[in-house]
Each structure stands twice: as C-alpha cells, then as structure tokens.
Length: 310
Image 1 (cartoon, rainbow, N blue to C red):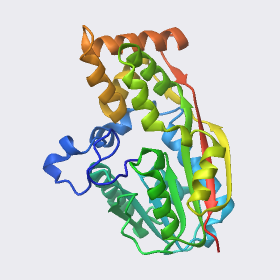
Image 2 (cartoon, rainbow, N blue to C red; image 1 turned 90 degrees about the horizontal axis):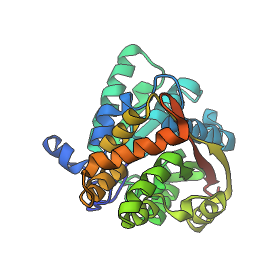
Image 3 (tube, rainbow, N blue to C red; image 1 turned 30 degrees about the horizontal axis):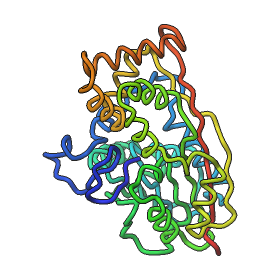
Image 4 (cartoon, one colour; image 1 turned 45 degrees about the vertical axis):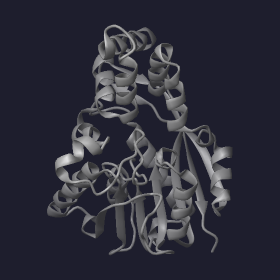
C-alpha cells in the first residue's frame, strides 16, 4: 500500500524507519493503520479484500502456490493479502512469507497481528516475517521469491519503473508477479470533481496518484514487458466499496486516506466553510447518486501477472 523512496513527500509515500514518537507526523498512512477496521460495514464490499482475492487467484493460476519457495507481499498494508494467503491456500510447510511496507504504523499493526495469529495457532503465520521495505530499493537478494504479490502498490511509488525492476530482480527464474491497479473508482472521481471545481490543481493530483499508464491492461502489460517480464496477462474486475451511510464513509476517507486528506486541507483553504463545506458538497453528491443510508460506490480495477524468464 505505502511503499516509497526516502524523501518522497507526496501523499502515500513516506520516509521509512521513522521513530515511533513521530509516526503521526511522518507516516501519512498512520491514521488508516489505526482505524482501518472501522472503515467499512462488517458485511459488504471492501476494495482491499477484493483486490487481494484477485491478486492471489491470478498468481496461483500462473504458478501454483503448491510450488512456492518464498513469497513477498509487497506494500502489504494491513496484511490483507498475507492473511487470505495463509487462510485459503496450500503451500509447502515452512514456506517463508515476507510482508513488507514502508509505513511504520502499518508494520507495527502487522507485527501485532502476527503475534496474535501465532498465539492462536493459525496456519503459516509462524513463517511470516514483517519488515520495513522500500519498493524502489528492496535491499533483498536477487532471485529469492517464487511469487511477488502487490495490491494497489506500484502506481503509488515515486518511481514505478524502478519498483518494477526491483520486483523483477528479486523474483526467481520462472517466478510470478501479480499486481492490481485502478481503472477508476467512484469515490476518487467524486472527490476530485468536488475539490477540482474549487481548485483545478486537484485533478492533477489525482492523475499523478493513479497514473494513466496503470489504468488499462494493455498499458500495464507494456510497463511489465519493459521491465523484462514475459507472458503478461491481465483482466478487469469490479471493485466497489460498501458503506453504511454517506457522511460516515466520506468523513472516514477524509480522515485517513492521504490523497483525500491532503485535498481537503489544501482546497478547504480556498472556500468559505473550508473542509466542512467540501464534505457537505460530497455528501450531497453521494446522496443524490445513491440515496440515504447504505450503498455501494462502484469501481473497476485490473489484475495483471507476468513471469520472470526461466
């Protein structure tokens, strides 16, 4: 989720190895890590889970996890992918799983989760290692992993080609990279439309964050092939977000998602009523589209896999 090069200051990117006393200032994903569990209804569509399910299914199809030697969950966030992998797939006993992220708060969250899972006797979690990783400079030995899993990661890095090159480097010959990225989603489109009506620069921020080259299977295939991957395949899938009421979900996103938080703060300075006025406008748009109460915001994503030449 939040893997980046040191010194990057745009929304999802963060200097790693920050001290615990400065996480709230240096780690833009800290709020998400602390409050992620209250973001969505207990039953419904969760984009992170949907993405992880497609990442895992696609990776397993290209190279069965029964043949895994070591697995990297790159940009692991709250370890959604690792958790589903351990719970739902079979792979050789003792297979190591490395869950890595550049957000110190995410790392702490997953370390705590690992301790709890091991104490419960959950399968495979004793073989999970949790580590601070920079996607653009992994500091891992080459040819190490049979599978690299990356849900909504590469387009958030400051240098996506460099991050792809690193993923290729650490894969073993014949290894598989499985990744997801967004074609579009309703909450981002709505957010940028409301903020962009006040400050057109917000549209540039959205384009920079999602990145046009990552919005189609064809363009992502080109990126992977440029990094050396072969036999690249991809498909689109629905990836919506459930919510219990419009105001609660929009306030949550505004509090914890870096690009939304940044856009509210910057754009709010330009209008009377500030942040609250922007949220009021967004709530009005969401209610107009989907009514009061529970609903679903639509989204479309893509899952793409590629192999390292054997």
